[in-house]
Image 1 (cartoon, helix red, strand yellow):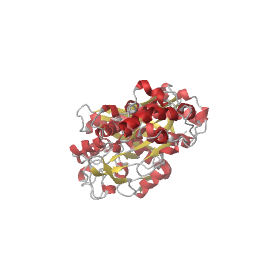
Image 2 (cartoon, helix red, strand yellow; image 1 turned 60 degrees about the vertical axis):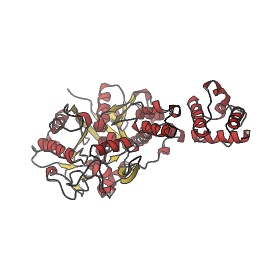
Image 3 (cartoon, helix red, strand yellow; image 1 turned 180 degrees about the horizontal axis):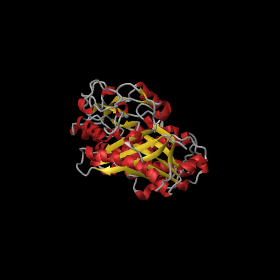
Image 4 (cartoon, helix red, strand yellow; image 1 turned 90 degrees about the horizontal axis):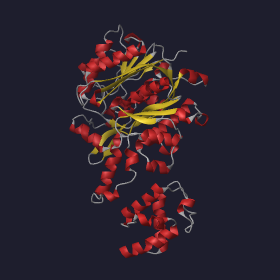
Length: 412
Length: 84
């Protein structure tokens, strides 16, 4: 069945090392990390990735006060994406705009803050804020975007652990193909470093990264890797049907070629390389591609000792069929794990490769773990390549959710 | 606590709750909602901040007493004085 073609026409982002695609890309090619030591409530100093965008660029002070950090990140990214796309919001039917944001979790920050607040009042719940419920409902970040834009179409989040960033784009493509909306504002967001619980949880799991130099803490595939660096961030795209984008003369970053979402059904936390490999293979089938068509594979690898090995196993299983290795990289080595934003941000960091034919590396590999020694891995320095026509982006999450998204160079 | 001090205290709270507003021109006798962008949720914030910062309780039945700066001062000043 011939499917409606779906294209990316605008990108807005904030990452620990950049508040625009241009700044983000420049830092990915220059080896600039965005990780700093950060005070975590009850836990002291830990490496984390915090974003430095100005929320007041697109929000009033009162809206920042009432809303959430995830909401501010979402609004910033959505507004920047729209500006980048050249779409004039006032000329659009706002009931035909969909907002679809992937999230790993939402509400932990606000709940922890309120528990901390009432701890100052002997845990008397009459000091619990009435803002708690609107701040913590799962649709909150997308709802804040709809309030800010005045968009009246569907606006909701997609909970998919750390596979969520890809899910925002996948869902957007589906809704555009179904004709539910004419413009999708979609991607992923995370405010996770504002909650101590995620740090404490990973620490108890022996999966929280530590390093005297925070910029070295996230080191996928390196022998000395010791866990995840928790980061915040967001990346939101404007996504349109090709015919609509062409009708308005839009700049087109790339085309959604194919995707797959599947589930391990094996463990709460541990990944399953066999299912990950199946996810990649099914995405290739969905895109009408083979492994030989893929030029860049952006890995999910989070810098945990076991998880990185298992993803490498999955990639080996699929890509060993190639004659020449695809370029394989990782973005978390620069920005840590931006959770719900990870997939969307990591894809954005690679999209400029369609134009500059350079693959950003994975950094902080001082001694490559032999079990992660997969052909094509771009280590520590960018690599110039002769062809970038397709990028395959992996994002995997707890409870065994896997997402693979393939973006191809746009050709009319 | 004088009524003037009470008005200032309420303005301090409102400046945090409505940080985009210019409070230098607020008329004390005019309803706050008629001169500032305040909604019912903001008034709940004012009630909460009175509770948190000053230990003052405003029962729901008395919320109308917070309509203007002057009515706030009339209603709250005796509460502050009792507390002191």
